[in-house]
Image 1 (tube, rainbow, N blue to C red):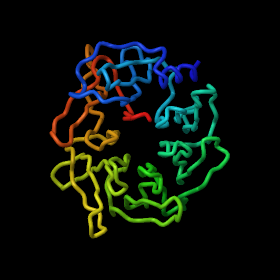
Image 2 (cartoon, rainbow, N blue to C red):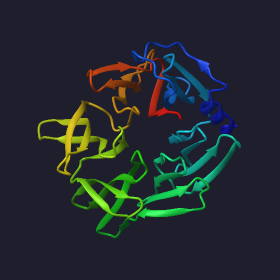
Image 3 (cartoon, helix red, strand yellow):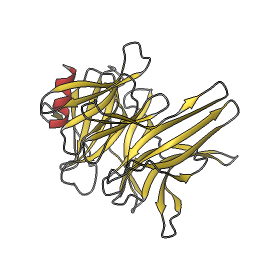
Image 4 (cartoon, rainbow, N blue to C red):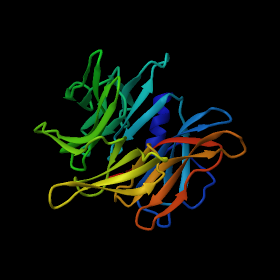
Length: 311
């Protein structure tokens, strides 16, 4: 039943239009924002999507347990993490839409992203970054971490560049006294690593825009007076150096960027409607106009938005 329900989500078949409010000023053809939601009253989990063509929210029930997911740009498959029943670690699955088949790719697989070619997926295990073909039979350890009693080095948040040539990632070096986080990228072909930012106090989640030399990231900072959370953008200038600018003050560490790089969808903690409980709602921020619009309402706590434009 779980896999059949996923088919309904991706193909937009057994779906119900909800009461909605205006989401964006201009509807965009073939663009959708997917997200996982949980009803705080019933605890039911669903995989929902916002159809930006007519500004409606649709939902299909799922059996629960899906955390992080991504959908191929040609809508041929969905890759997702699902925790084991004992909750110890997530397994990585790939579900082929046409054949309606689900396959276990790895017994340990965290945040996953599909390559622009739809032929590969990138994900992390406990310490390493892995790339695998969609069959799961051809895996490569792209970045290998390690640990000893005094130090642990590991990698997080692998994300493809727009042409599939690079994977951006966080390198975390942790000792008993300190944690150092760096933002880097690696060439999938040559395996050469390029440094973007040292001591980056955050985690990188998204590459966006039409160039490989622009990336968005979530950053935490503490200037000694207050704690700040921002979504920042790194750009490579003509001098071949990376520059940083804050594009959204108060953003969250779970966000995505529209395919044209002009909007950010992010989570924000809110009091859930008709309850006294806090949860998360989704908001869209227009980078050029510097305006924010709420896109989810009601008794839903939302997580892991994915902005897709299908081919």
